[in-house]
Image 1: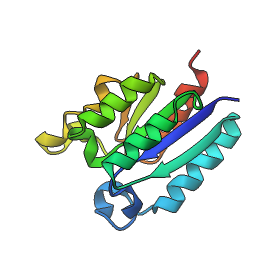
Image 2: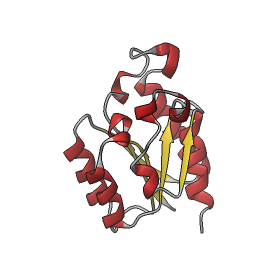
Image 3: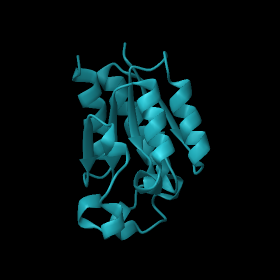
Image 4: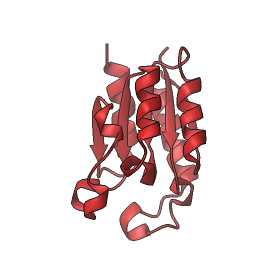
Length: 143
């Protein structure tokens, strides 16, 4: 059974409250429930974490080394600023899929660049919560 770590970054705990016209009305608990239910149906062992702290996110990624077979990451705003999260992903060498609930490529100019994409095998943007399900499927089917 493949083990997948899902890492959610800054402000994702505010889903359903933060800009619902962009991110939808589903709250963070609903997202976690969808991820867990989808992983179970796919036969994946999943762990979901969230932090507003860049250092804590790096810690989750580092601790994944030798334990997880894949990482799904939505680093939130750190996507556009964090070389250290990129370096942590490179250091552990675990296949990763980057997910964004909104389409970052059609938003403000500063959101269109992703450090995470320099490592991730795939980027899924603008598919809402379903992007996480697509990411899990990608990692499940990856050989």
